Image (cartoon, rainbow, N blue to C red; front, side, top):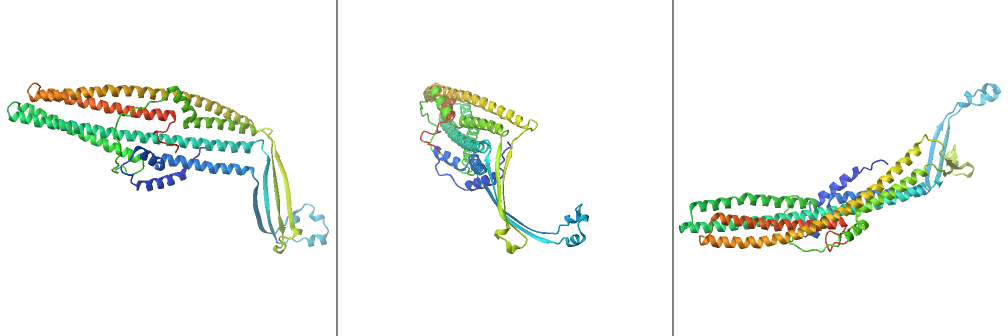
Length: 451
């Protein structure tokens, strides 16, 4: 089969995308809103949908092969034909007869209906229709696969934005702590119980927070642009999102149950099965090429010299022809097609088997990540509690001269690391939830139904 190209899709997708870019997202944007906008506007989804519509047109075209093809044909001709004068026996005709045979120009008009109908094709037309229908089901499954992939991309971009915002909050909180500590050091320096070195260290420590803040703000802008790109709005649009990066426990079904569900509903698996069915039909079609085919052609119309005689019964012209075709010898071309069809069928079987194993492996890995991330969150939260307590103690000790500025700095750094660990583990947990849902063919959100 020739590769299918979609050059006309480019203009359609670009037009729709440009129109969507002019639309601002609702404020504030929830995750479900972001997924909905992406599915409505994202070029990946639009292209997959247009490919499906094109295939539906192909099905209509294939079905037409089983119905009569009716055409109205005609022509008008003015002709002078001297072929009788060039006959080898013309000179043997009597002189008076030869002198009467003078070619003259004449008109000829013909109009009529032609009908062509396949009578027997050894199942080729029926198989072609089934093949087109399987292709439609494959494209429908492929469209759903694209929707799920886009939904996961939006889910990941949304979580990335929440992660960047959470990291920025930690940097700002660290800045406030160091600013407060600098004020405390200055007060102690004014009282003569702290050294100028302590003041300088505190100022440097506070100044070192500024590059971290700039990087965190840049990460927020980049994450927002990625999300804007997926929902097809201007990259610099000031999109705001609802929610924050929180740990929401989710009890996932057993991996075996998830795998069984995935093999039933996951669109990639459905695409592989449709491709296998198509390979079987292509094999049947290749075998049918060697069989008898019969069709009928008929014509009814009028053939006249004078247009005034058109549609007169005496000038009616009609014919009916039954044609048959039985391949006898083609130099092995049909045999080569059968070999190719058999190879495609075996390859489709292997692809389905490989995809089945990959799905099971993806689910196992995602479930393991979900469990490990949950345990990491518990440990990280405990570390935050302990780090907060240590910082509080060090600040109190410093106030009374029982701790140094470096002790406070170390405590602040330890608390920042602990908070970032909680944020990172929470992000990994949410992403593991998304990967489990994607691998199992489940909706990305609990309340998300069939789109």
